[in-house]
Amino acid sequence: MSDPYQNDRGNKDRSITRPDSGTTDTTRRSGKTHPAPGTPFLVGDDMTGGYGKGPDILHGCTIAVNPGEIAVIVGPNGAGKSTAMKAVFGMLEVRSGRVMLDGEDITALTPQDRVKKGMGFVPQTSNIFTGLTVEENLEMGAFIRTDDFRGTMEQVYELFPILKEKRYQAAGELSGGQRQQVAVGRALMTQPKVLMLDEPTAGVSPIVMDELFDRIIEVARTGIPILMVEQNARQALEIADKGYVLVQGRNAHTGTGKELLADADVRRSFLGG
Image 1: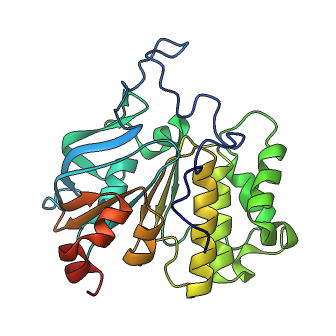
Image 2: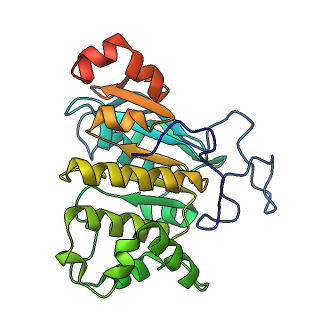
């Protein structure tokens, strides 16, 4: 797998991002505020909440990511990793805390409205239309766009060459790794400001996992912030700019990927020594 710690990752080519993605001016042309310098581009801040009327699963959890970064959420089973991701995306009630995107409080928005604001979300399962072709899946990803999206589709094909080769094949006939590429590609068709991936390497072979991680690094190089939940903790932290270890819905450890990999407590408790 390519070196995840090279200094030139990020902001190389913004062509698959929205024109205003990752800006740090104090105001937009429309008058909306941007995050102040040092403020994360996307942050779920001090989130407490759960599903429906059930008990809280998250307890003061905070996760954040900046343009060009890969932020990874890891932890044991039942730690609240996917719940934290879904809270940021608006799929469960945040009873206290808030979610901020590009300086705007989006805590009260529905997932659909968050997509319109620039959030791309790839769930772990049921993330493609199996009866549609690869190309039709990508076209479905452009449902919110009114411009010509063919250029973006070509960029997705450049990122995932196998998808161009199989563009007329039913997505349900693809391998697990190829399906994940379709799912990520479809999310990129919206030209997201931020990309959220829930267990993108679940159920794939180590070779396919390495390839997917390489492609995720390439996406981050375009300037898109990536927030990712991963069970393959060691491999995920190797490519992470930021890492969040959750335990029972709380932040247990936070740091760069390198720092967490070097932390004896993290290695012993979560990485197998």
